Image (cartoon, rainbow, N blue to C red; front, side, top):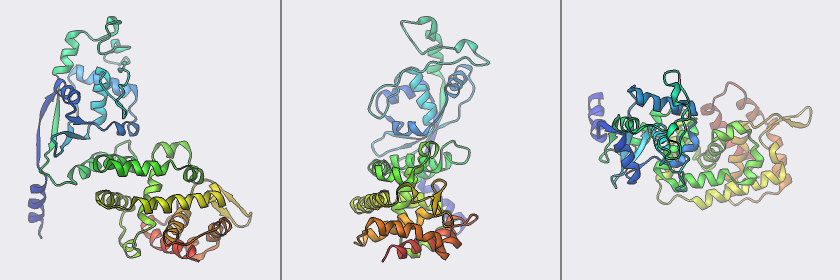
Length: 368
């Protein structure tokens, strides 16, 4: 198929529309449950009060706002693909934004800006504090302001909105790759997303990985669970064509989430059993570097031993092998004298080159 045919084919699979909509219309959509801004996403967006205030200031001053991208579902409801923080800020300011449980957020209180210093402590409409509320004319000005909208129609290919979300929310975005994956997963299969999050909160897992606060906030623990699910049972042949591992993780996640008969039970058993064993045998030293000359573990979490130990242990547990704590501890320490591990776990070796060697190594180490 040539370029012309490829372009024609994909243009037929992506149906779009677009037009400006008033903020009052956006408010109406939210009030009538005709738009899904996915309150689960709120934890991944870190807009400060200054950023939120600047958005409201821009609307008041008539400064153009980037377009909102939405995807039309089969039931007609719009999924927000890009623009969630902008809409959330507007809904929070108006006083209608709700969290995952349906509880309303406190209305947003603005700060002063260089152009509009009188915005300090201003609210949308507080009948008990009219001196710090917008006037009716100012509220009407905001309601009549328009936001450009790009709509991916429901006739489009199923994965179009997820591809678009990923493209719009990478690069200059403040989201980490796993935060983007989590958002995609919520839109695609919320049950799968909640399952991954539940596994990431497993106490033995959290104890063994012992991450610091920053990677936890950036959902790195969820990424580690996803990596376990993807690589503990991967066909060895597939390791030779990984390409970019981040993209491979995303594509694998999407494929699993679309499986109608995904075996949650088997993966959960091998995951929990693996980390119960690791916690009882070696604990938080499992994925820390082992200094053979000093006979002790040093530093923090390292990914390469995770790729050998977690995937290899999980794979063999799923095969029915039974392990005792001392055996697991000895094998975890032994990798630091293994020539293959030492050769392929050093700095400068990227994951696409490393995994084809370390995944089979882990399976072999824990097979006996």
